[in-house]
Amino acid sequence: MKILVTGGAGFIGSAVVRRAVADGHSVVNVDALTYAACLENVASVAASPLYAFEQADIRDRAALDRIFEAHAPDAVMHLAAESHVDRSIDAPGDFIETNVTGTYNMLEAARAHWVRQGKPESFRFHHISTDEVFGTLGETGQFTEETPYAPNSPYSASKAASDHLVRAWHETYGLPIVMTNCSNNYGPFHFPEKLVPVVILNALSGKDIPVYGQGLNVRDWLYVEDHAEALLKVVQEGAVGRSYNIGGENEAKNIDLVQTICRILDDKRPSNHPYAEQITYVSDRPGHDLRYAIDPSRIREELGWRPSVTLEEGLEKTVQWYLDNEEWWRALQSRTGVGERLGTKG
Ligand SMILES: NC(=O)c1ccc[n+]([C@@H]2O[C@H](COP(=O)([O-])OP(=O)(O)OC[C@H]3O[C@@H](n4cnc5c(N)ncnc54)[C@H](O)[C@@H]3O)[C@@H](O)[C@H]2O)c1
Image (cartoon, rainbow, N blue to C red):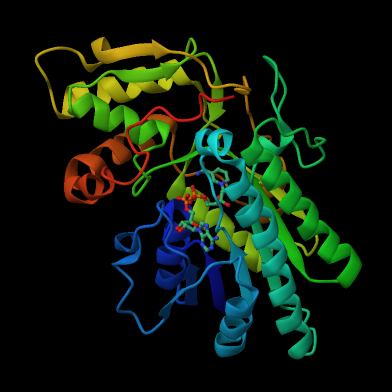
């Protein structure tokens, strides 16, 4: 299969690119290389004859048309997005332009390509989205594919809008789409502004480890390499027009996640004090959703996919990766906004 992956220099997109090439697929990685991108993430496959890179912005329709024409992909996996909730609070316009208008451009460029090819039934447009579109849960319950949309942040609202566009392009034009909504990812190559790397890197550098509010927010943690495997399964075997929720079956309160990372670091890189002593509670994120949890029955029952690691195992691997790859994260720490408290303007 020849797959056009957008956002393949980012965290999840690069895991998809590495996995797809390892599985023998041809990949065209389309990425604008924003602050969140790092081509090092795909260095292991960059020399493969199965890999091509196109620097392009999904807001640029003409560039997308040229790329579709040049590469004639069998499938699109659309991951390019502005992805950081805190940045969406400070600068929502960027999220509307990339996540909404950019997805519209991708749909139109893909549709034009699909029509030129004679509307092959086997073509797929796979839109990668988030469980944040469903809003927040109370103490109980899980998101299913039928849960009504109720996004609460500019980020999740922009992703919800993009999901609706994808659905409409299927219903109206017959474009063969599949959609996935996943929970919070963690793992190797996670950009150092997100919670898990912030905890690891602040602990190692002796800084405060910031926990929003009282640390009681619950997330369902998904190891990024498990996610990449699930996405490749959906693009190949998912039913057209269907959406699949992907979760890690690993719910944890933020404070428990942070304590676990500190404990793993205490074992792997002992300091003169337990790292948990560096935990500091800071003011909460405006509109911070309390709890997300995924009911993964559909993907498990229809496609036979389940996560391969527990949260403890995935965090062990992740912490070890950050200890072994200091050069990678040090180079990213000087990028704009990294290490600053963002998203307090709400
Ligand atoms: N990280 C998570 O926990 C999570 C959870 C659920 C869903 N998602 C979704 O998965 C996808 C990937 O997330 P991620 O965490 O890897 O994001 P990321 O921020 O690490 O990477 C995004 C990539 O998209 C590229 N990009 C951004 N704007 C672009 C544009 N206008 N044109 C072309 N490329 C552009 C960036 O350069 C970057 O390489 C996103 O669609 C996100 O909404 C992420």
